[in-house]
Length: 397
Image (tube, rainbow, N blue to C red; front, side, top):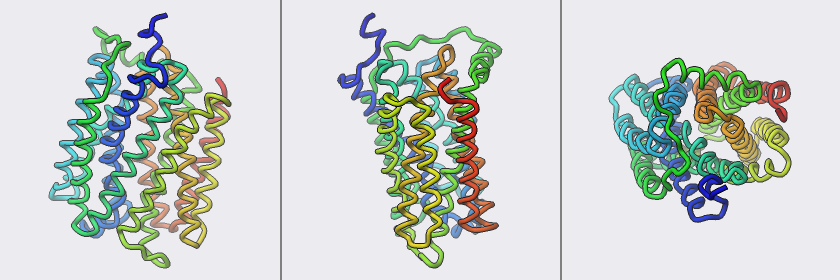
């Protein structure tokens, strides 16, 4: 077989450029998507709203992304993964700059929804692009590095927005993040290797496109991976949405800039995601995925402790476990699909960001009713349900 048929081998110059480009795309996407998360207490105070309503600034964007990923997969099939991702990143960056200065809470939500819909092009197509262009023996490791890169984007968005907002306003903080995302978008466009294995899907009607989506839903293991994405991401986002509200109150009374530093825990995911990919290549995806969820639950329970250092240790452990599980599940959803790989990635991301929107918001109801213990119980239930789904539907099918 030719090099073209095999794809870029691990360690080649093109392989390294592709991973660097996707890392930049991850920064541009995930920095913007979650930039309000670190400043939710400031948004709530400034706009006179509650914790769960302020969290809608995150959920609106993730909902837009969730609803857009499958349509983006068809755009990618028609016009190319790379070209579509470039349009997505540029459009989202413009909308991000506008949404930070919308005059009302409702206008912020609408623009955040549209921004999320634009951002959907990156997660919808990145795994399909990666699986097509990278040698199959390197795909699991490359997927782990891509997910690790997205953690850097998520971390930067939160860590940059929070201290800037502390000395100015949450609007300036979010604008700063969008400007940083614009630079990352330019780097992505410059670095990304052109597609060499992409074959456009043309002349396919709506009915045929719908069948391409449904073919993935006939695979029990893929359905299990989609459900796992919904449950795990929803629980993970709920933890980060509401832990800040706990830490600004007694007995911790942390200032806003210090709360922003909790997102440094995302570095645990930067380490665990590629490591999980390497372990999966040796021990199998299912075993590593289940182990990662168990690590996530252990970290979650640690956050119930009183001392701040134990709470933060628990957050580190939970984050490492989550991103390990996500790197395995997302890569598996793309690799397992054969006839509709782009749509499988789209369905995975629909579930993933749907969970972020729905469960990430619903965790606030538990927080308002019971406090932090309610959030922990809510997230533990979601993670336990994931283990059941994995056992019943996925395993080593």
